Length: 527
Image (tube, rainbow, N blue to C red):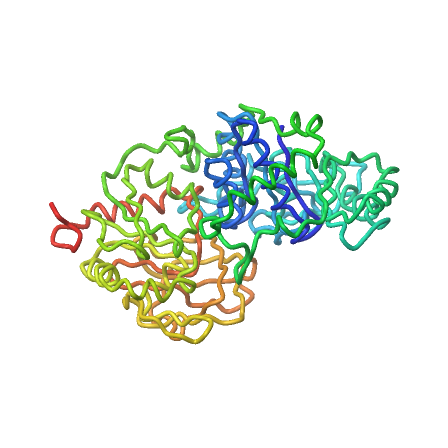
């Protein structure tokens, strides 16, 4: 069955509860697969640090409802236990994609078999949504698309609801009752009471909740010692926390005495082979991955080894925002991934035919990145020789002439993009719909994609010949498009983060471009 860990809002304690549960299960020697609702990169790093398995993102905006269901079903096949960490508050999401709408009051039901992956190139959107309706005789409120509630309903999973009790007592019952009754078709497994101050405080909370007959499956006391530090884009990534092992051990100790494991363990048990026939048919019709296999502890899409190429993937403290599904797709298509560090390495990777720079925190490490002159020069030389390069957000920043940090210091970058990436206070955040306005190394003109932006930097010079026209989610046709993305030589550089799970044509096109590139004579080729 397993559970979705949800909260009444951001900051309620979902991540702390999730990490504590994972740490305890791993301590007991159990195999656990974790998932994260939404586009976040950082929380999944903590999951993977604990479990030793890649955490999988479940995001119906970046992929599709069908892909979310298929991804979940396939990745629990070889584990004993699983859990899903939600995003924001339980019902916080976005308006439904216009192609999938019926009316503002319709309840989100299982439409996987009726809605195609709307972003798959050259595929008509299926519009027969006549079965989207409210169950008769029940009062429901609509569930926002891509919310934790939406994913819980899609996967038919009960919710373990976390409430921050630090500033309330009797009102806890109103919160719990309100969330549980907001849509009765969502199943609630129970509650976790977080940041409880004392035994007397706990007694007041339990007395208030007693009439609801909602199990209390966990109680976490206030403890600043188990707080994970954060910075401008959320939690500090696991790789940068030298004392993380000790913190995880403490959370495992806490979980051992804070949760009702007799009730929780059966609820967290992974139920296998629940993929429905309809989603299989849909995936087959529209070219999405139809089978998942396990290889070297990573579950990947089986698409056939089409491209025998070597791709240099920048992965270190500065560049670590990658969806595992993207990396899996590259490997399943035949690519050999060469992980390297623009931060620490002194030699450019040998005999590679493509470059992949994910997002991360180049602004935090700008001085050291800038100081690695040999690598900056090698990257610039490779790009100017025509090597296909894909760069997202932090990767885009690194390719700029310079990065201006929060203190106003300017650090030279690779210098391929004639602009500077300057840090600021303004947070750019949200889903985007984008249309390619010209061919690039990963897209062809008029391709539509759904992406996500999350950054506090801006470019001092905007692209004169952009890759995309972009709109905030749901605003296409209502507001003017924003020019976004850079294309220089064979570079595709953009602030947009893309999940390729429902778009295997994107990595396939990138690898085709890489296969066509002759790396001989490029710095790093030592054949």
